[in-house]
Each structure stands twice: as structure tokens, then as C-alpha cells.
Length: 359
Ligand code: NCD
Image 1 (cartoon, rainbow, N blue to C red):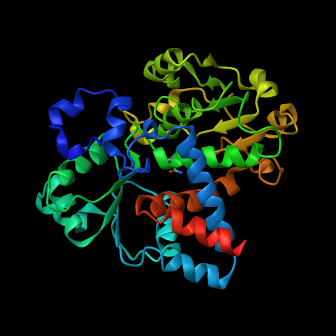
Image 2 (cartoon, helix red, strand yellow; image 1 turned 90 degrees about the vertical axis):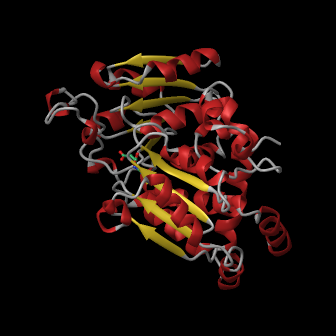
């Protein structure tokens, strides 16, 4: 078994994400650190979805809730969120509550010791003195990875979960997106031979980067990337799809591709990354929005997704259409994150046993 402890930072940096992934896993194939989408293959995604389904069934009764709450009550988790967050923060916090994991949090570095000049590495080592897991969202690409490596070389190597690393990756959002797709197509032939349309700011949206990778685990998936030219997906994603022989297309005409879609994944303009003020506002995004006219073009079995928060890229007239999946998608996030934490702390088999005996 390869471990982060066994490799120098320099050698680790030379590896591709696929080569890095095994360093982050436990013996049973469960993730220890969760840093990139590249750690998850089809069987592992299936295992997580099954565990999430069982947890949500168990959680429907009082006695089941109490069982779940006793599972990881001996561990504590740190929520280190130095970038704005509502859903990811609250769903991770709720996931910890479901499993009985007490949490602590830092959300504002202006009131932590980082303000006094403490380095990120020292901050993370400090958290590891008090907690058994760190769930982190940061504006910096690669910080979760660096933290995992630093801790692996300390006397308190604890798991790190990447809850969003700059514009780079958002692996647990991709897990909840896959879980939503699996559930949506469960009774209609499953997640295979589907066309997924991504629309919006694909250049800076990290959720699309992680999800497009995870989708390559399913047969016959076709992806269409719809964005203004200035905000089109980066070539590294397209190169990855080519390498894996996945069919894809880039377009700037949302309406033209909607009839082909099994899922339309809308995203907002990520103008917090603008290099100069007002840069995004100069881009014409008017044709990258989903409203009543787009809804009329969508197949009756297709779904509309969004990682949220939205601005005006999905009109509120869409909200109560049965194909609007973004509210359910959000709740799925809490359950799949609960499953991920349970699996990370080795509770998977106990939960399966409880489910088998009681359902
Ligand atoms: C996304 C993110 O933070 O990348 N939000 C989320 O976690 N649900 C998407 C976004 O901010 O646009």
C-alpha cells in the first residue's frame, strides 16, 4: 500500500492526479484523504451511493437516528472554510451531526492566528492537535493536498476532505452530483448512454471540472460544454476526455443542444475570480440562461441541475417543474457527505449490518 508518508513533496508533485490517487486511499479501497475526483472509480461511487441510501433509510426512525449518532461520536471534525459557503458548510456540519461527530470551525482568518502571520501549514498542524478530521475550503488551489502531505509527515496524520480548492476541484460536490444522477436515472436504465450538458462559467467553475472527470466512469456518457468563448472549459479537461475516448463537444448555443440532453447542469458566472473589476460583466451571457423557453425544449425525462448558489441563470419559473433537481441535489449532498465521512472512519460494514438486520 502506498502512503503519502512514503513520498517526498517534490516526488509527489511530479505525479499525475491518477498516479497520486492511490496515496490517498485506505487498504479497503475507501478514501482516507478526499482531495480530487480522480480518487473515485465506478465501484467506489456505487459503494458510496449504496451507503448513502442506507443511511437515509436508517435516519428515518428515532432509533435509527440514535444508532447513526453513535457511530463516530468518538471523533471530532474541524470545518476550516476560508471561502464563502452555505450549502457545503451546512451539509458537512449536518453530516457530522448525523454521525455524532462534534465540530469546531474557523471561517474567518481575520480572527484566527493566521492574521498574526501564522502559516497555513502551522494552522493546519494546530487544528490536527484538537481534531480527528479537517474539512477545508480555501481559495488556493492545492492547499488541501499540501495540508494532507504536511500532516502525513507529522505526529497527527488525520484525514483531510477538500470542500472546494480555488477554481480547481470540488470533489464532494461531484459526488453529490453523481449521486443525484444515479438516483434520477435509477428506474430508467441507469447512468449510461446519457448526454450531459454543462452551461455557464466553465472556465472558473470547479464543480464542472470535478464532475466531468467522475462521469467518465460511466459507459456511453457524452458531454457538451456550452459557454461564451471567454468562459469555455480549460483544455486539460478536454485532453483528459480525449485520452479516455469520451465523446464531447463545445458549443455556444444552449437552445440548440437542450433537446439532446438527459441532464442540463447550469452554473453561475464566477466573477469573484475576475482579474480586473467588471471583467465578467462585459461578457454577453444572455444566451446561457435557462427559463420557460428552454424548459419547453427539454425532454420529459431529463433533469436540470445546479450546484447553487444561482443568480439569474435559472429562472424561478423552472423551480417547481418536476425536472428541476437542484433542491433535491442539495439534500443529496448531506447524505453522500455523511456516507463519505462514515466510510473514511471505517463504519461502512456496521451500517450495512444494521440495515440488513432492520430493513
Ligand atoms: C459551488 C462552489 O463553491 O464551487 N457551490 C457549492 O459548493 N455548492 C458553486 C458556486 O459557487 O458557484
